[in-house]
Length: 188
Image (tube, rainbow, N blue to C red):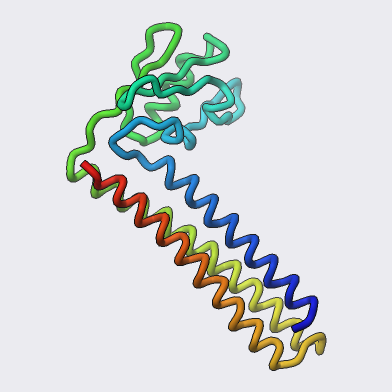
């Protein structure tokens, strides 16, 4: 196969790997029964008019299995952080003592666990859609190469098969990570 095709396939492989990592990070923010600072990754605080990720405004900690602590660098941002956590839709209730915010992570009931699995599956599906979009873009580029006469039809066909193998492997990797997350959520 030509160097152009190899470049396209390498690019597809890298973009799909980044999608798997990004989706895995987002899955980390789905709540399970135990405390983890990644739960707060999606929390964005309106800090002096600028949307700022919580982890840039405070030190996050997990002193106990069911407790998160948020210690702001600027004590004046305490109320803003507390409001952002409440508004985040994570179902967490922050307790503010004037210096630090403590968040108790309640035990998940069966219904809430099933809801969290649905959220995880939705995140996983968004990752798969992103990978299919990468595949579509590369297929378009391969067709353009063939139409422009840069590569032959046989090379294009072989490259399409290789691209499908790359896509299948990336989706299988994501499915494995999603299954592990579902098991973690459903674990009592």
